[in-house]
Length: 300
Image 1 (cartoon, rainbow, N blue to C red):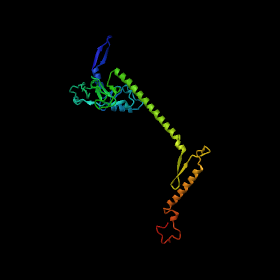
Image 2: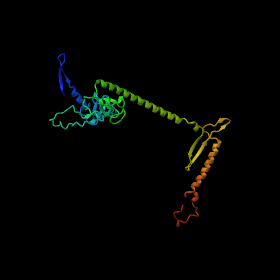
Image 3: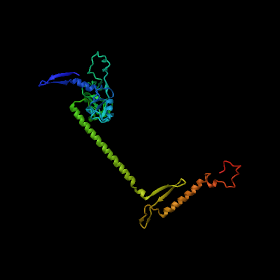
Image 4: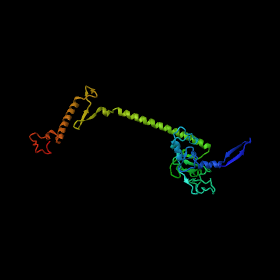
């Protein structure tokens, strides 16, 4: 970095970092690992640039001796960053030419450009990204072509979804306030959803416990008999001298109907059992049984 010396009124010397070098560092290096930016590149809600693998390593590190970093103190989850959809600069030759060190390294030449206007993303121009899709555009493109839909992928967005990259202190303060309001709103929405789900569950339990009017008047209980058939006992509502029958007790009419249904089922079951060879009607008597000499497979 270039360092410029200047004198104050008291004669004290101080060092002032060159603004151009600082801008180049912001747009070229990761704000967390201080390594060169490489795909995939993500941006936080305050407009800082990071390598995605550096953010993932930071979030996975749960050790107690983890040193707090101010640049990522507001990032608590991978959802708090957006992967950027950047457009490559065709005029950018990369780092291959400056490997030997015998050629001039142009720091003003940027790797990425605005896909609409073609301005290089080197810090001289203001750039924004959309939280919904991650596409990056210059300020000039957003002003000249005003639209509520992304110019690159067509995803709709609002004014709150537009975040400036590497803005000044005033821009960061505005973005910080938006971030806090957005997170508070999401928390309230989650709480309201939980309350609604709990209320709906309690209402379902109440409706299941309380019997309806149709169930109180006529009830049908299906009882499985030993023969595998179903017996239906019908509980009817009878009135004697204006008094309704006591619930849980079966009147005389219902008892007679049950006896008839049981008798019919027994007759049917006997006819059904007679089909099989294990039934008593299918067995032979001792006289019909052959001698042990003539014993065959038909002997039961």
